[in-house]
Image (cartoon, rainbow, N blue to C red):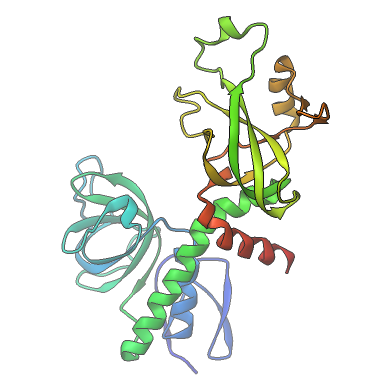
Length: 302
């Protein structure tokens, strides 16, 4: 039977360890269970750090007073989240533990969390930690890093999967043209920060992943506004190639589009077509994302 010891936050996910099912976060087991915990924690974390605890009840962040739940670590490596925090190797970072008193000074481990402050130093709010690296040498360490990578991929896939859940159409294509949708009150609305400035793009399907066919022309509505509330909404530009995850207008979106007469749009053949919408940053992706998105679609069918 594997030997287990306490670590980190209590989670409601169960795994088998040495033939006994236990609660992740309540116990740490070498090898298989530490890998399972690493995948679980990484799937909920934007940043994963390895490092050594240099101080407990301490903080490097001026806006965060030290307390029983804060520790300072010296970062050895950034396993995930370099695009957010950069290379922090050799620098100090503050970790806000999910539960006070779970980590001792001078212990080493892997810390999974989400950014709270990013400045001269970084602070992450802890999702979980695995104290002391898994035993077993290079092979075990490699397997552990691989388990973190699986969880990290799940973390990055989660918002895309959420969009696929509501999508009517998923395809790669090229934007042939785009223009503004104008209603009778457009002049008065243009100065309002709440105006999404709806545009409609004509997109020709290159490869269909769901709900369309190659060569089909799709009308896709998007917000062109650059105001604060809409700056992160996807924008489509003539000539652009993209992977598009589009959904039918919800009841609320239909009400917004009604003044523009955009609930149906007439194509060049005079046929009325119901347009699709893209409203999330994850609705428009680079065309080379198609292999990963297709894999996620296949996973949905299992």
